[in-house]
Length: 362
Image 1 (cartoon, rainbow, N blue to C red):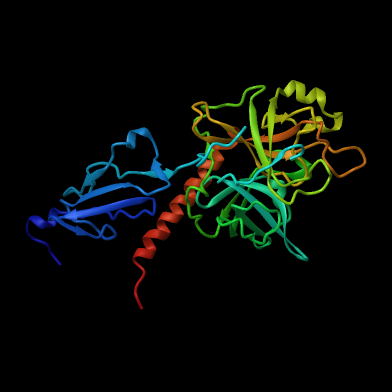
Image 2: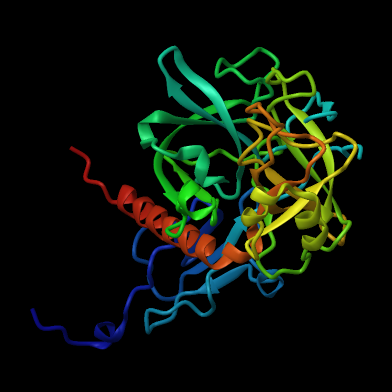
């Protein structure tokens, strides 16, 4: 069909669909849907939903856009990202660690399928609404159906207790081990994995991601203190029933190498760092995959800088030696890989949101 007249040059603007945005579209002084193609002259007013914030300070004053006749919005639509790394209340600063009566909002627990059901295996950390990060070796030989992820749990069994009101259990869509990870054959190098959940985590004050230091503003330094949370082996050589916290110190590579048994030094590379204290405070079996986390320089947010990977064993046992330093996977080495995966998942999620708006009603 041919078109004649001035309206033929008018192109509608694309819809504004995002679960991260609170958006209102106004056309001819009437509120209209933002989910359909939008007529020129429409004003879109928006802000980030609760638990989200503008992706950068550049977007701080980006509050509205106007649909123009060429089908373009007058300015880039606001982009929001989850608020991360904050605590509702101040936290005083797990072997010889402390039991804690709260859960860090980003701490996650990996449960794997055994004959008797799903059992506690490793720690993990929430870094987006759909993704947790952990150690690759925690998932060796496992399929997605063999794993469940708990967020908001204090206890090491998968049953949700009455004093875990925010705890949730999630199924796994994909386990994404780093492509260069080779387990024992490769000295556990690249011991990092991302796990995509089957559904979005509902973010609130009690459950939200830790911050990732995308710009490397807070690179680790020797003697810097961080915390690790886990439910691994305690000083009594038994698994902890409840979450414990320990403060550990970053150790120089040279000191770490000199202090480790000769056959363990091969695990210390440029992709790792060491932390611990020589007084018996350490992380141990079962703490693998948990985060080494530090407070940002502005003292406002917590950032993940490492992942618990390996510890030397006590002689003639399968248990760690708490008087030896622990090796952590260094997050800063893998930022590009992590960002690539998160962007892919975010794009896929947006496509699903758009499709769901246009599903036919049968």
